[in-house]
Length: 147
Image 1 (tube, one colour):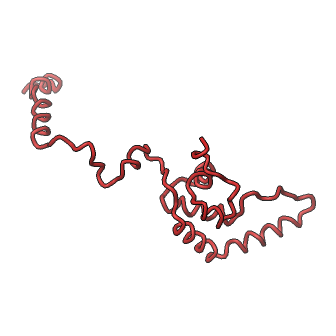
Image 2 (cartoon, one colour):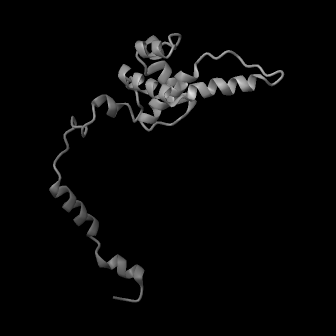
Image 3 (cartoon, one colour):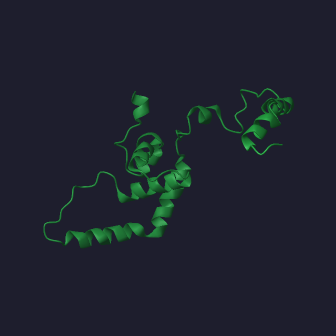
């Protein structure tokens, strides 16, 4: 050993990386390309994008939970208070508060981001026709099937 760490490290073990590779490869078998670790091939190939459609049961459960909170009544009360201000007016809503809250609850169930763009993807592509009817979103069609 010398007093120079750089020289000592260079001369210490020059074949350490080769030994490590040999050790790692000795115990490993060739991986099976069809084994996705419990995931479906569609999930793997989606590139971490959630492309699956929410089931009608999931939407109905989220819908009932939104109703159980009582927040929809609060929204009505807050809007009526805001409407009392002189000159305050708003466009009629195209998407109800109920549908937005159900969509956000669905995103929360999969730990998704609470972004308007994520909510748009849910409304346009990830709901069954029955779920769209339940949320009064029948005007939103599945854009992927139209392409």
